[in-house]
Image (cartoon, rainbow, N blue to C red):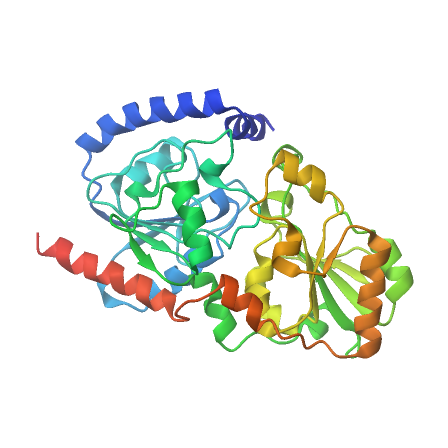
Length: 391
């Protein structure tokens, strides 16, 4: 709880954030001058240590196929209770051991940051940053309280569109002259592979039931509480759609206190799947997506199915957190602030039994990339490895 409160204060206080950043740069600047950062180690983090999945996991999977990295250690910075992928080592994020690994690793791979706002990178370290979704809510230094994101030290960044590029330039200081851009994101890899099938059998619900995914983003209060409050009444969903549909709740990793992969049944029609690893591999089975300010919309758009925004707090969220645009800009008429209106729309979709919606215009605005980005990212790491060996 103390750790969570300190993290919250650093995020919300511009003064504390700036002071932390300045002190960190001074201390680690000296350490980086003394330590070469050239051990055969690749350090990964995902969602600030809350996960061992997402884009860094897909990069790990590709790295394991490459002979150049056969002798490398794979180390994950993780929070308490989170396990590293099989065959990898884990280290407690923000511990002295974590920073020792960071100072000595030859490669950093992350979807948020490795340096933890301390503004350092050893001179021989190759830094890969993928981020973790196309943003609707303001991120990084676009928040009034933040000034610690500095992608000038990033060697390779994943960007899926011009929309993302403009945001990453303002939020992170991304400079295409200094940082190599890969036009994609490894988290999309699973969308173009053979997806997992069997959500119905895994969760034991009827074959004819429609599958509705509710995947809200996190709120600031979730950092301290560790568990987000659902804005959808799951019991009312059960009363209305029992036998016709099931609701899968996928909380943001910041808003989920669960480290177990077990599925939690909330009632006869609702399941909390927040702990399921590799959930993107099941997206093709989802009939309707409900979200709010989350990048899930952009990932799910590849399946040409209904995407509904449920945001009863859009006005206050926009004032408190900040949005790049109102939700109507992204989803047009499919934005709902009242649960009754949302459930009415879901009922229409279920009764019509047709879940095709052409999302090509949405994708053309927000997504343009090479689907094989994981291979391209690792190819750049291989090229760096070859040049490093020749020095």
